[in-house]
Image 1 (cartoon, chains in turn orange, purple):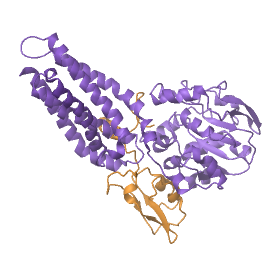
Image 2 (cartoon, rainbow over the protein chains, first blue to last red):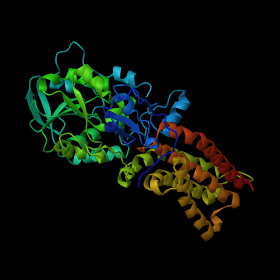
Image 3 (cartoon, rainbow over the protein chains, first blue to last red):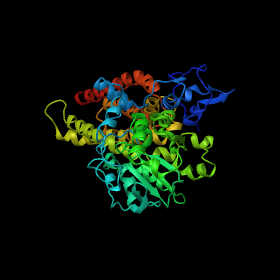
Image 4 (tube, rainbow over the protein chains, first blue to last red):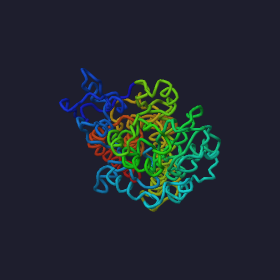
Amino acid sequence: MKLRYLPDVTTLELDAGKCNGCGICLLVCPHAVFVLENKKAEIVDRDACMECGACASNCPEEALMVRPGVGCACAVLNGALRGTEPTCDCGEDSTCCD
Amino acid sequence: MSDSKKHDAESGTPPCCQPIVQPTDQASGSAGPRSTSSPESPWITGKIRTAVGKIPVVDTELRFADRFGSWKARWGIRRMGYRIVPGLYATGRPTEKSPVFVTANYKMSFDRLRSQLGRIDSWILVLDTKGINVWCAAGKGTFGTDEIVRRVELHGLREIVEHRRLILPQLGAPGVAAHKVKELSGFRVVYGPVRARDIPAFLAAGRKATPEMRRVTFTFSERVVLIPVDLVGSAKYAFLAAACFLLLSGLGPGIYSLDRVAAYGIISAVFLLAAAVAGAILPAALLPWLPGRPFSLKGAWAGLIPLLGITWLALQHPEIFRNWPTFAAWFCFIPAVTSFMGMNFTGSSTYTSLSGVRKEMRIAIPLQIVGAVSGLGLWMTGLFV
């Protein structure tokens, strides 16, 4: 059974004009968001994106943009309580990040 | 995330003027005093002589101590200290042509990798990820471009292998820019499969991973191994809340009554603990079958199971409930608790995005507060009427 999260939320953007068709985004994406079509990357499953940021950090042409982060409510709460960005550093007894 | 770079900078690197690293440097504490490995670690079976000194050779069979260590980490027992000394290791009898695998210094990550290298002579470059697994460390940036480039330099990898290729776990990619690693170190990054168990097939196919090997999954068995650490993590709060309910239940008309604690307090504490157990187990175990996509919703549904139990009890033994508000209270309180716990399971899942989590939290947290407060209000009302 394929698990799906909320639709229409990802911050992922692809600038097809910059894409050189190297295909590294297809290799690093853990959820098969991309395909290569006519030597250009294309987003085929946008809602599967979990914003890990692997595609954007590995894109040599900076054709991909995403606001990366961990999809972790605990991290969001931590950040909100400390007034920072979401952070996994919940201290020694943290139960996340495994 | 934000302080990941800072962490990188403060890692216990040997002084920069030191010559090319010797094996003893690996044990000189670069993982800090809590490190659990040393040159005497039982999984180090020998040394191999190289151009830059002796490199520890590691066992590719996991032993009881390794399995027990993983089990303890799964139960949250000194999990954050379950790390090995970063550095270069070997499996089999590697040569200058052997592949180089890169991993994190969380012992479970390292064990997963080495246990798949039984027939493969290789080098393993262990990064200092502060004892965090590959994917989470990549998210923080500690499994990242800078650390790879630094370690390639530090351990003299250029003199150990003649090729210029590093095999990284695919899940390390969020922290890495492959093209920058190449530019800064001369080594080309090859992304291996997501799961270490696919490494032999990946190598046999000429360092090619199938689409299945590149997909992250979240199967039943992958989910249930996460339950113990969530149980342990929530236990502290659950027992604290249960103690509060126990104490409060003595309140009521007239003086504080221990009879009321015995009659209603104990059962309330039990219900609360049941809710916590349900919240830790059910969202993980039943994830695909709980209706709705938001984890907070799935968690709320998970609360139905303890509620069914409570309803059954109420029908069999109505005397254990003081009155209807103390019964109804659980229908507000328990879904709020399990919803919150389900929502926190997003951090353990393999497919939730930050944007999605933020979106569901904006709706779920107010509802959870309403549920918890009204449940508590009903329960307290029940004590006095």
